[in-house]
Length: 276
Image (cartoon, rainbow, N blue to C red):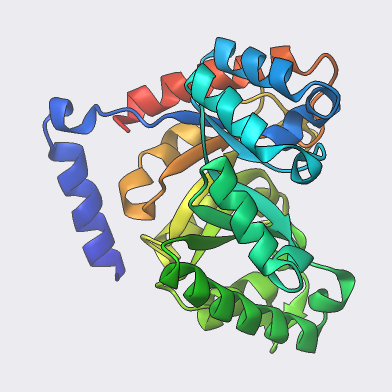
């Protein structure tokens, strides 16, 4: 999609009747934010998350991979929660791929997110092999009715492979029809990238946003208490192709729940204002 096509699509969306644009996305929570609460009390934590208003969760950290997944699924069903995606590390798609697929299905997820890679995969040759692995595994997932996406940090924009930043190499060499992106907005901005520019570069390829805010000093904070312009970014949701909005705060302060409550209210308001 070139710039003229992108602008035309955005203009058409803005001109569409409000009623046609009012369907609301469910707001999700990356459970890594509540890992300190979740690991000792997964059921109670899910109950508190649902009480706030969240209707989606994304599993990551907190020992979820070692838990009774059938029990977690029953708890989500009871609470009206769903888990569209789960986070796994590089070993989860390299050595333990079959187990990751089984875990995803047990939790009701249809998408595996590669959340991290090992140090060896952050080298020039290591990243090339990692992208080849992503292409292969995403094809296998598609054959099983599942999907794949990669979650960025800041270092993908600074470390290099093939003479370009790792993120750019992934965009250029990852299969665009299979390897989607889970754009962590905070980390992209921390690395000096503009999320709106990323959307324009890879329209339709962004599976989800990780939504967190940044203080003037560059620290993480609840959405709405920082300076990031989500109002503008959310107006590009249709062009991005984004399906899910996961609140996350890697460094959420105890007692944790006030942070995700504030973020939920802010994201809900901004999505409504954006007509998304």
